[in-house]
Length: 279
Image 1 (tube, helix red, strand yellow):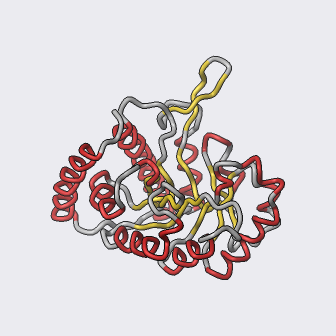
Image 2 (cartoon, rainbow, N blue to C red):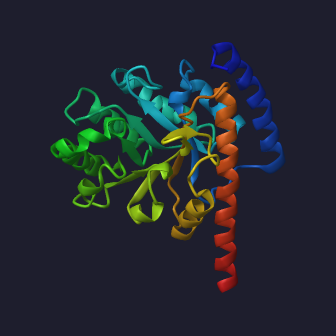
């Protein structure tokens, strides 16, 4: 079932009731590990003023804010909407630890403005358009260097897709450049300790091909993945971004979030128990 404005208004109303009930019952959410964030690109046509209600109701910790033309924030409107959107979302008790942009060069119009305003608003990391076009990375090292230099000045870190950026990341300042990791693309141990952001995706076999599928229905060893994160004490953002065909996209988001939340909590609790027993 596709997203519609009417359906989202219904989700907003139901989520508001649920969020209010949870607040009365359990009080403020306590941060104990990584942040489970929703890719806001999955909410086309939904104004960011509604995100707090929707994300709280669904059970997310925050969002991965899409900043591109046609996205949640249009770069050309960033002087008004960049700070305002983050303030609205964080004012709802959520976090915006990462933004995803379409920029391929720091020289593009609005690139500096978006990164500077995001950093001042507390955003820790940003992705570039190379997350969509990783094959272009090898020829654009100068542009990557420009992003890192500006990110260092603005105090916001660049994350680049693994494994396409492996040769580049090794030569970049580890304080301001690291990996953006997709568990369906490799072993997470290969990117430690320069792991900064994660997009949660899975792949299943379909004949001779691997195709996107719901989390837990593919080839990824999720228990091992989350155990590794817990042991490394990773506390960065995990973006839920279903990229497979689903008859009901909202249900796909809920299902992937519930799967990730269950295994994430179990892995970090197990690691905490081990630490406590050692002392």
